Image (cartoon, rainbow, N blue to C red; front, top):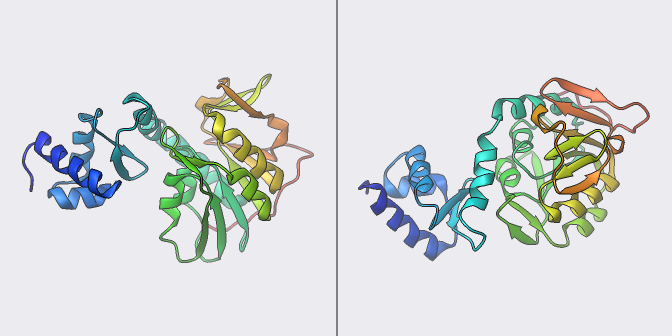
Length: 251
């Protein structure tokens, strides 16, 4: 089937209603078009369907703009986010347990995780989990709870569950970093999970692109001095006196 955009979206709507969720690549195969065509079609069908974390779902009650804020952010400053995560990779040690926070920046870290040694990855976001799930050398632990499409993350007892694990290194994302106000994010449900991960980790690193500097988001969750270092596209800035987990050095 190819047809026009309306016909394709009608078909996708029926499939999503039946399955609950549909992977982008499966949708493209079903319709006989490219993934890019499906994404263009979805952009014109915001009142019915949305694309999030590699999956197509029915539009939620939160209104058509919320999921697309996440989608737009995923494409924003992608090169800078990817570069920041590349600087974070050497902080991952062999046979360690790491926590990867939610958001669009750290999805790039999930794509760049080292090969050649075993890792345990803890996460609570769909876009991170889907990038790790295919790796046979990684033990993936996805913390569950209520799904929040605005950040492609889960929340519930995830913060409490983190206390069960010995985390060597936590990689934390943020929407704003202000010298006076501290480190903040946009979604309140993320705060206890971020804070618990940092409390359980030997070392925590803040990974952002430079555009986050000077911004303040609604949910404050840490101070800069709570981190062992700040990682941006310009490299790693270590904070003296803060603990640091052993670096990996493998890529």
